[in-house]
Image 1: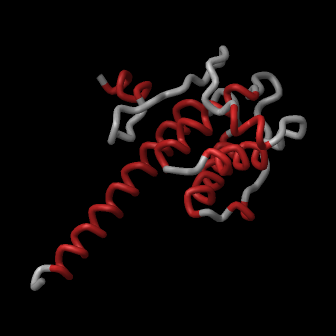
Image 2: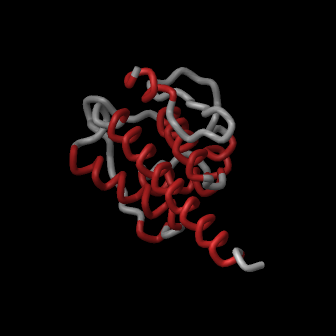
Length: 145
């Protein structure tokens, strides 16, 4: 057991580094897909809200609205929440609460949103399922190639 402490430190460091990589990928993805729907200020607020969600600070969410001339529709929001929540390992219910709180979806119930996060309806924001063990977004990898 001589190396136990060192092994634990190495595992914790690797875990922190992976978490940082995932958060960076989520931020890059958000900055890539959301500007057509959000102002620069609202995009910054969304990134803060994502940080709050990843830490479980749901009481700190700040509501925002998409652009009037190009509003986010419910399927886009659900798919976005599924895409980022999957990578952050956020439970489905918390993803539903996130978009319902942040985008003030008054007419949809939490249960409806939760059940339809990964639906296959037409939308501008598509479901992006990573390969097992991966966190990268396919749409971002195509652009880098």
